[in-house]
Length: 237
Image 1 (tube, rainbow, N blue to C red):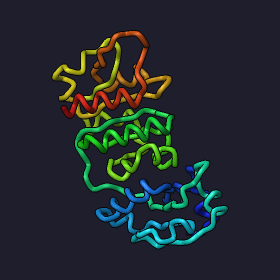
Image 2 (tube, one colour):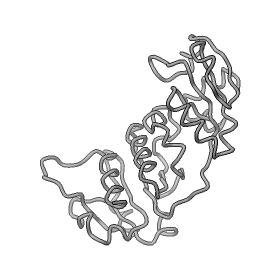
Image 3 (cartoon, helix red, strand yellow):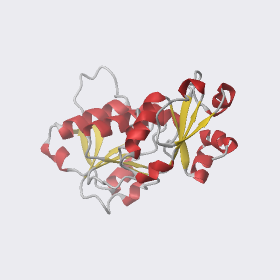
């Protein structure tokens, strides 16, 4: 890709237009290279480096750029000097169970959730319309490379969940405890927007079952990513 086009990848509309996203920093580039060993689509990635990384061992086409050019591309205040341009890709494995995220907005939350799903395995991640873009550089960084290992489905309407899934769960303070056997029998787990949650009318239409994470009650709620992490741990232990 041309450098001018690469600069535009900070914006979602251009990521969608060019079907590419940015992967910045040593750790993430290493994760991309590992993932490319098993995913042919990622072989088309390109690497941009400053002199400090000129001898970086990579299977990708590599272009040397200066620090000023890197700063124009980078999303970070202190760029490391290495950034990759990766194509959109898909994963062949599609686990039966799914985590559905309804209109979540925080890039850090999504990245952390993807990281947990990659650690435990056995889930795909469904994102509703209006959710944060998983290829947002902040999401990619927060995922620590997990984005290359979790099957993603975008623009999944909540009203369509009844077709592929038979038993759907969500969290509610008045629900059954997670340890209830019914929780593990579900095949889709819905988590809502950080501020608004999920409309009760939509949950009722899905005949979704309510469960709760038992706590001391000193505060009203858990962070979204923490709630997902606890649920996935309970399902996998």
